[in-house]
Length: 42
Image 1 (tube, rainbow, N blue to C red):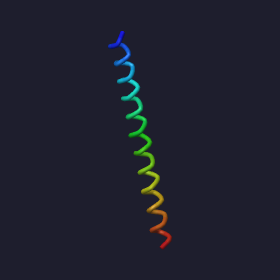
Image 2 (cartoon, rainbow, N blue to C red):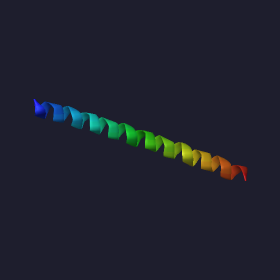
Image 3 (cartoon, helix red, strand yellow):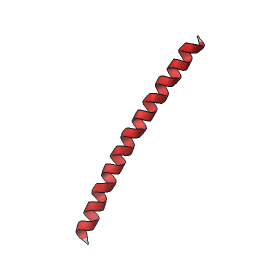
């Protein structure tokens, strides 16, 4: 019973970490695009 709960928690943790990494990648990508836009204005 405990093992099952641990495995569920671990799965949730892994999924959360994956989602976090993906959104960080997107934020970084958007940030780079914004920086390029601003440098082309100047």
